[in-house]
Amino acid sequence: MKTRRDFLLQSGMATAAMLLLTRENLPAQQQGPQPPQQPTAPSPAPSPAQPGSNPAVQPNPTLPDQLRTAAASETIKTTKLTDTIFLLQGVGGNVVCQIGPDGKLVVDSGISTGTNHLQDALSALGPQPLHLLVNTHWHFDHTDGNAALHLAGAFIVAQENTRIRLAAPQYMEVYDVHFPAAPDAALPQETFSDNNTLWINNDQENLVHAPSAHTDSDLFVHFVRRNVIHTGDLWFNGMYPLIDLSSGGSVNGMIRGVDQVIGLADERTKIVPGHGPLGNKAALQAYREMLVTVADRVEKLKAQGNTVEQAIAAKPTADLDATWGKGPLKPGTFVAIVYNSL
Ligand SMILES: [Zn+2]
Ligand SMILES: [Zn+2]
Image (cartoon, rainbow, N blue to C red):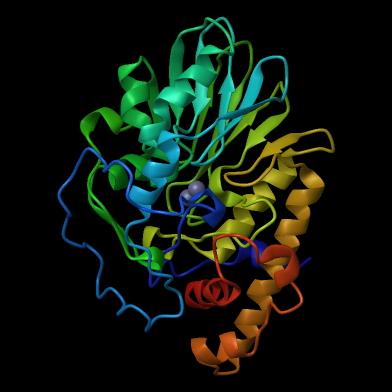
């Protein structure tokens, strides 16, 4: 445990971005239905990298189209976590739904083309009306279904940077992806800065902002009485995480956010990651140790004067890749992201 890292401040300067989904969710071909929108917006990012020149970039600019194609035929897997809380897993980020006398509270909205599948899965949980949607952060794979769920009755709550980023064009450097501004119906109706508490469905739901973590808009949701936490993309269970530096993320902020979740959990807490299977405190602690180990090793290489290319060539994650390297990020890309965030 390197507790000094708990107290580090980070620069917040963005030089790279990260993405969202595991590759096995992507279709083999990319020619399905086109998304119903949107002219390509000009990049607001300063000096995007030349493809191939930046080791923190894995270019895949058609990724949103690929995900929308995959989600159109997705199958939602439903897992009961408690009597009132369910995990719904499809192509986008993990979705949680709580049911009760106040209606359905949903955390994250998936991909827009899969909304009909998501709504079918939600309907199967019970007759309660859709009441509230919480976004864990602004990323496409967690908010693309916002407009449809809002039009179906959901009031949307998020950290304030989620609304700010959704309301304007965004650029994610890691896959060289441009996102246009979201339509008004997709924007949160209520935002907050640090923390917000809901009292819904005979539970207490704490929405806790984790600053400069996976992005600058992250929150995790703690269902206090039911002992369930949705971490958003603070946690990619079993894989190197995406850290979106171009949205204000940082590895040290990720570690701090994870530490907040660990501090609230006990051995019985059901912890839902943004991506990957349902987890628990022990699995989150293992992930935390991986993050700290990589950050320390890369920080040392950087302090010794190595360039990012030299840091990658030193293979500081060689002993970790078999366990953590099967997600969307190549190990070298993850090292570059960590390097650029320190
Ligand atoms: Zn995600
Ligand atoms: Zn994300």
